[in-house]
Image 1 (spheres, rainbow, N blue to C red):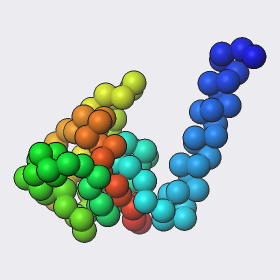
Image 2 (image 1 turned 90 degrees about the vertical axis):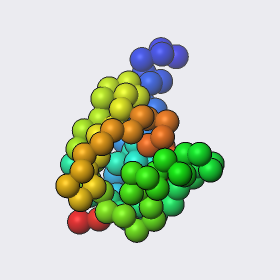
Image 3 (image 1 turned 180 degrees about the vertical axis):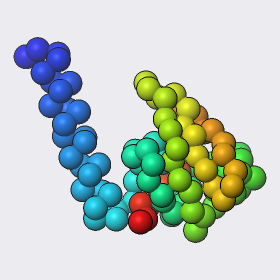
Length: 102
């Protein structure tokens, strides 16, 4: 088994599951949300300190956000909430569970 072939199959499988999550309106992490999509925060899967940070940024359940960009290789993710733009690290973005909206 070639490593590239294994990675390619794994990537395709992940991409297909991501598309089904968006079309089916299933919750997904902010890191998995495609760039340019609007979303609503559903849940915060974080401990107390991270939850406080999310609350100060306005990322609470029910908040509407838009993912503007993401860096390659698990870099920071830039979001827009209301008229405010801010960046979250990849690890923090994985803790925010969102649902894609139109």
